[in-house]
Each structure stands twice: as C-alpha cells, then as structure tokens.
Length: 297
Image (cartoon, rainbow, N blue to C red; front, side, top):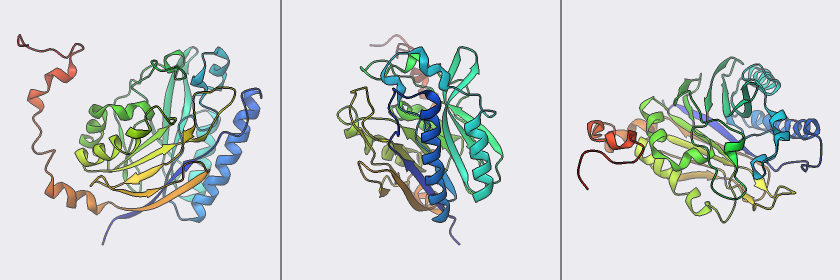
C-alpha cells in the first residue's frame, strides 16, 4: 500500500497597499489566507504551506524601520496561535512563514511547523539573506538563521523547509535530505526578470540530487508603491525524479493541490544511490570562506 499524502501550496496577491496601517494590512492578508486554508481543507489537504511572509507584502523592497512592527514571537505570536487552531480543526499540518522577533531588535525570516493536532513542532530560520539586488534589502530586516536544517516528523511525512533565496544554495538542500526530509517546502517571493529562468531548474535539481519531493511557492501580482517587478506565481510540486507534477497559474490566487506518493522516494533511491556514493571526506572546501584548501592552484 502506497504512502499517499495530499499536499497543498497557497500563492496569493497582497490585499492592501503600503499606505494602509500595518494592522489593516495584516488583518486583510490573514483573512484571505484563512479562507484559502478552508478551501484546502475542503479539498482534503493534509500538509499545507503558505507563502513567504504570508501576512503582508514583501516589504524588503524598501528599507524602513516601520516594518519591524510586523514581527512577532514564535510560537507565541498571533499568527502561529491562529494556525495552530486551524491545524487542529482540519487535522492539517501547516507550515507558517512569518517575520519573527526573537528579542527586541533581533529578527529572523522564519517558518513555523504545526502538526495536524495543532502542536507546534519547531521552526526553521532562513539561512541565506540577500542584499545585492535593488528591491531585495533583506539584511536590513533579517539575521541569518541559526537553527541548522531541521526536519519535522509530522503525522503524515517528514518535512523540511528552505526559504526563498536559500534555494540557490545546494548545501542546505543536501543537509535536509541527509536529515531525513521526504518533502521540502520552499516558500518564496521572487519576481519576473530576476530569477524566473531558475525557478523550474534549481529546485527540481535539488529533488533529484536528494531523492525527495519539493513544494515551491511564489506569491503573485505587483506590490505598490514599489516597482521591483511582478511576482509570477507558478508554484509547483516536483517529484524525486525532478518532474513537475502540478503547477499553479502565473497571476491568480490559488490553492495548488497534489497527491505525493512517498514510496517513490525509495524507488528512486534504489536506482540513484547518491547518498551511498557521496565522498564527504573530500568536501572540506565547502566549509572554508575563500573556497581554497591545500597549497594547489
């Protein structure tokens, strides 16, 4: 009997512009997501992932201390508490990406993982923080993650999380595989013209290299008053063979649903023995800042 898990991804357009109060912005986006979570429940979703910084716009398009006020504690903040209630109500695992305040002035880009009975299982903090392209000023808001690459044993599957810019770095994707992930979710906020050509390349490659499923989420629409481009959606699931098996539209709010057969993971790994054939003793260069080891070159 196959281990079939019904999974969902939510991609959504921001509701209110930046001219509104932070309370109004948060309330509007939370209300929209609650409705979409209810839709996912009606479709029988067992594991659901929301988009990066789900309860607001992608405010890293500017550098303004105003947005610090959107941060909340994890797991004791209002967003995680609400999602715990919804997870228990619908017997649904929910991955909840939020702006986390650990201490006053210490912030992380974080995803909380909630099991199907509403229990908080832990959190992942985004490791790789971009600050190199106009409109993506994340180092102004986030400290690099310090909790490693945890995998969460939910009722339905072993789940890992990678957030947005993390997807450009194969090292963490491999760590999630070695830590036992069966499904890796990557909630993102990325625009056309920047990395769209990589969107359907990198994460299927991670799925192949590590023999797991990937759920990649991107928001949709343009967010004013900023002009960093269009968030192009196209959220998708791909299998351990790197094949995209379900994909959302480019420009619409959507709950993407797919059935993932976790038995495929072992089938693929019996053929492609990448974990067996690794040579970790030769990878010292990966842990040096300059990329140089020894006296050669």
